[in-house]
Structure formats: structure tokens, C-alpha cells
Length: 354
Ligand SMILES: *Cc1c(COP(=O)(O)O)cnc(C)c1O
Image (cartoon, rainbow, N blue to C red; front, side, top):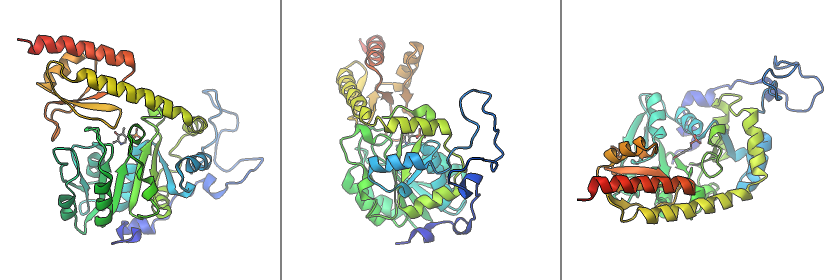
């Protein structure tokens, strides 16, 4: 197995990062004349005239306690998407290296790789949306640097079996990213507990879903200190703005609220899933461990358009591999779900009742 240094792009290993004013001085002073900031304040109101902490130390201290890792094992990104992008940039040399994805899955792995001219090897999931472990491992070669696993998987909604992920982590000679954007909605354990065991494991989480803070753009990567220090070295220096840092600190002071929110949402998920079973035009309601439900329909694209006409937007996944005629329905608040079910009933009866 290659170690992190062997997997890294050689020039990244040698890179000397930008050193910001706030990197070079981190104590307390009475006069700050080091960063060319405006001393008077902000035109917007609020105190936004000083640059934020580039390493979000206060946030990470709290987060480390909550997650049972060291602060040095946490990277904060402007959304998980920044973490995905930086991982590709750190490990994959354009036009020679490759990543493996297991479609149907989250689109950003492919987009990030494509932006950097990194080749994408696709090994589809099985019909039951689980990895074809042997296939995946047999497709890897010296150029394969990252394997992306999404669990619970978007758009299928199911957990990937823990044993399968472990076999992939053990067998894959590169970085394995386990994207846990929806882990709070799942009964499965996070892979965070496996970090001490696997130096090639990166776990992604986000404040965008269960924590309800998508607009603040706060994504997390957890990994060995070695991998995290690489991400910190290549990230934009001030990638998390001060407002987001303040808000996430506030949220972390009320972390217990997440459970209640998740409980409500999972109840809505169960209710919605039951209501959808057996409705006209619905062929299959897939089980979900996330905050959305994949539904197979008769003529999904037509239904999608008719829902739009009713002012209801769902995600049309009908052109996606293994998702023929599928729509992905985000579980909304009770009244939103009720509106959706009502509209679907009317559309379905008109469309399919003979
Ligand atoms: C929503 C989602 C994310 C979160 O992205 P952010 O950039 O943190 O908002 C990450 N991975 C998957 C699979 C998602 O569906």
C-alpha cells in the first residue's frame, strides 16, 4: 500500500503555501496593522472588517469534542464540494491520474475530476445499489488515486453496507472518501470511528442537510492529520467567512437540537413513503436512510413536468443509470409533503386510471 506521500502529486508535496498575516501572528495584540484591513468598521454594519481565522480554531475545538477526533483531523470547506475539489487537486495529476466512482451517485465527484482533466472510471452499483467490490478493486491501477463512496447514497437513499466499505478501504491502494452528507438520517454508524485504523480514509460530512445550514456553505472532511494538513496547505486562506464561523459555533452550542429535527424528518419520511406505496403510477418506493426518497414511476419525466405545473419541484433522475423512470423526492415539512402527495394523486389518476 502506498502512503500519503507516495499518493500525493509531487509538486504539492513540495509546495510552499501562502502565508497570510493571520498565519504568521496568532496571539492577542492591541494594534493590528498587519493585514491592510479597514480600521473603522463595515459599510454593511456588523463587524466584518477583520479577516477571519484561516484555520477556524474555535469551531474545530468544539467540533472535535462532538465528533471524538482531534482538531487537527478536521478540515472545513466552503461546502463539502470544496473538500472534494481539493482532494482531487491534491492527489490526481491532470490527464494521467483517475478516480473511481460508483454510479448512480453524487454528481460533484465526476464534475470535480472533469474540471481537472482527471479520468473517471465508473463501476456501477448493483441493482440493489451496493458496490460490486471485486469489480471496483479490479479496475484500480497505479494511476487510480481516489475512490468515492457515498453512504447513504445520493440518489438511491440507501446505506452502503459497512462490510463492503471496509473491504474497499482495505483493498484499495489509494484514498477512500466516504461521503456521509446524510449520515444523521441513517441508523448506521459513521465511519469516523475507523479513522485511527485507516490512514487512507477521508470522511466527508456537512452542515447543509441535518443541521439546516446549506446557505452558510460549511462542509467537513475528517482524516489523518497528514491528509488534513495537505488540504489546509492548498485551500484558499480565508475559505470560511466569519459569519459562517460564528453561526456554526452557535449551532454547536445547541447540537442536541439536531436529534429532534432528524427525528421529525425521519417520521415524515416514513409517512411519505407509506403514502406513496400503491398510488397510481408508482412502481417502486425505494427504502431510504436519508432525507429523500427515490421513487420509480410509470413515465417519470411526464409526472415531473406535471408536478412543475403545480409549482412542485422534485429531482428528475430518470436519465441516470439504474434510475430509469425515477424521481428523487426530498422529504419536506408535513404540509409540503401533503401538497406533493395530493398533486401526485390527481396527476396519477388522470394519467393512469383507465
Ligand atoms: C448535499 C450533498 C453534499 C453537501 O454538499 P455541501 O457542499 O456541503 O452543501 C455532499 N455530498 C452529497 C452526496 C450530497 O448529496
